[in-house]
Length: 119
Image 1 (cartoon, helix red, strand yellow):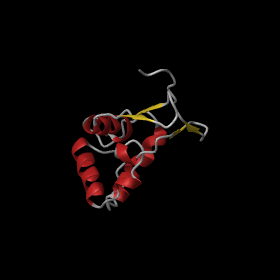
Image 2: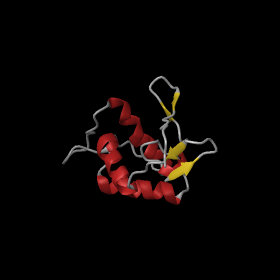
Image 3: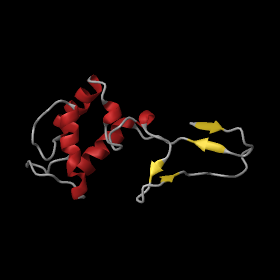
Protein backbone atom coordinates (compact mmCIF):
# COMPACT_ATOMS: atom_id res chain seq x y z
CA UNK A 1 0.00 0.00 0.00
CA UNK A 2 0.94 3.63 -0.25
CA UNK A 3 0.40 6.13 2.52
CA UNK A 4 1.02 9.88 2.49
CA UNK A 5 2.41 11.53 5.61
CA UNK A 6 1.77 14.93 7.10
CA UNK A 7 5.01 16.25 5.60
CA UNK A 8 4.72 17.38 1.98
CA UNK A 9 6.61 15.09 -0.38
CA UNK A 10 6.92 12.18 2.09
CA UNK A 11 5.41 8.89 1.08
CA UNK A 12 5.40 5.51 2.83
CA UNK A 13 5.39 2.46 0.57
CA UNK A 14 4.51 -0.95 2.02
CA UNK A 15 5.72 -3.91 -0.01
CA UNK A 16 4.35 -7.37 0.78
CA UNK A 17 5.03 -10.80 -0.67
CA UNK A 18 2.51 -13.45 -1.49
CA UNK A 19 2.13 -15.22 1.90
CA UNK A 20 2.26 -18.76 0.49
CA UNK A 21 5.31 -18.01 -1.67
CA UNK A 22 6.97 -16.44 1.37
CA UNK A 23 6.32 -19.49 3.57
CA UNK A 24 7.52 -21.93 0.91
CA UNK A 25 10.65 -19.84 0.34
CA UNK A 26 11.32 -19.75 4.09
CA UNK A 27 10.79 -23.50 4.28
CA UNK A 28 13.31 -24.18 1.51
CA UNK A 29 15.99 -21.87 2.83
CA UNK A 30 15.55 -22.37 6.59
CA UNK A 31 14.08 -25.71 7.71
CA UNK A 32 13.77 -28.32 4.94
CA UNK A 33 15.22 -31.80 5.02
CA UNK A 34 17.39 -32.99 2.14
CA UNK A 35 15.35 -35.12 -0.29
CA UNK A 36 14.98 -38.71 0.95
CA UNK A 37 16.67 -37.83 4.24
CA UNK A 38 16.09 -36.57 7.75
CA UNK A 39 19.14 -34.33 7.58
CA UNK A 40 18.87 -30.55 7.22
CA UNK A 41 19.44 -28.92 3.82
CA UNK A 42 19.92 -25.41 5.15
CA UNK A 43 22.55 -23.04 3.85
CA UNK A 44 23.37 -21.41 7.18
CA UNK A 45 23.92 -23.48 10.33
CA UNK A 46 22.60 -20.53 12.38
CA UNK A 47 19.14 -21.41 11.04
CA UNK A 48 19.08 -24.83 12.71
CA UNK A 49 17.38 -23.37 15.82
CA UNK A 50 14.29 -22.53 13.74
CA UNK A 51 13.04 -26.13 13.54
CA UNK A 52 13.13 -26.56 17.32
CA UNK A 53 11.46 -23.16 17.76
CA UNK A 54 8.62 -24.06 15.35
CA UNK A 55 8.11 -27.45 16.97
CA UNK A 56 7.94 -25.97 20.49
CA UNK A 57 5.45 -23.29 19.42
CA UNK A 58 3.24 -26.05 18.03
CA UNK A 59 3.53 -28.01 21.30
CA UNK A 60 5.62 -30.74 19.67
CA UNK A 61 8.55 -32.15 21.66
CA UNK A 62 10.18 -33.88 18.67
CA UNK A 63 13.95 -33.62 18.34
CA UNK A 64 13.75 -33.33 14.54
CA UNK A 65 16.52 -31.23 13.00
CA UNK A 66 14.62 -30.45 9.79
CA UNK A 67 11.11 -30.67 8.36
CA UNK A 68 9.48 -32.07 5.25
CA UNK A 69 6.97 -29.78 3.54
CA UNK A 70 3.86 -31.59 4.79
CA UNK A 71 5.15 -31.49 8.39
CA UNK A 72 6.06 -27.81 8.02
CA UNK A 73 2.57 -26.96 6.73
CA UNK A 74 0.94 -28.88 9.59
CA UNK A 75 3.15 -27.17 12.21
CA UNK A 76 2.49 -23.67 10.81
CA UNK A 77 -1.24 -24.48 10.85
CA UNK A 78 -1.02 -25.67 14.47
CA UNK A 79 0.85 -22.52 15.54
CA UNK A 80 -1.84 -20.33 13.96
CA UNK A 81 -4.55 -22.47 15.59
CA UNK A 82 -2.91 -21.84 18.97
CA UNK A 83 -2.78 -18.09 18.20
CA UNK A 84 1.00 -18.07 18.62
CA UNK A 85 1.88 -16.59 15.23
CA UNK A 86 3.25 -13.44 16.89
CA UNK A 87 6.01 -15.60 18.43
CA UNK A 88 7.15 -16.85 15.02
CA UNK A 89 10.56 -15.92 13.65
CA UNK A 90 10.54 -13.05 11.14
CA UNK A 91 10.86 -15.55 8.27
CA UNK A 92 7.50 -17.16 9.10
CA UNK A 93 5.60 -14.45 10.97
CA UNK A 94 2.62 -13.02 9.05
CA UNK A 95 3.67 -9.79 7.38
CA UNK A 96 1.02 -7.69 9.11
CA UNK A 97 2.73 -8.52 12.42
CA UNK A 98 6.20 -7.45 11.30
CA UNK A 99 7.66 -4.12 12.38
CA UNK A 100 8.13 -1.43 9.77
CA UNK A 101 11.83 -1.15 10.64
CA UNK A 102 14.11 -4.16 10.17
CA UNK A 103 17.12 -4.75 12.37
CA UNK A 104 20.40 -4.57 10.50
CA UNK A 105 23.38 -6.83 11.13
CA UNK A 106 24.63 -4.43 13.80
CA UNK A 107 21.31 -4.45 15.64
CA UNK A 108 20.33 -0.92 14.58
CA UNK A 109 17.01 -0.25 12.94
CA UNK A 110 17.10 0.48 9.24
CA UNK A 111 14.44 2.71 7.77
CA UNK A 112 14.15 3.10 4.05
CA UNK A 113 13.05 6.52 2.95
CA UNK A 114 12.07 7.38 -0.60
CA UNK A 115 12.10 11.12 -1.09
CA UNK A 116 11.01 12.91 -4.18
CA UNK A 117 8.17 14.67 -5.83
CA UNK A 118 5.06 12.69 -6.32
CA UNK A 119 2.49 14.26 -8.56
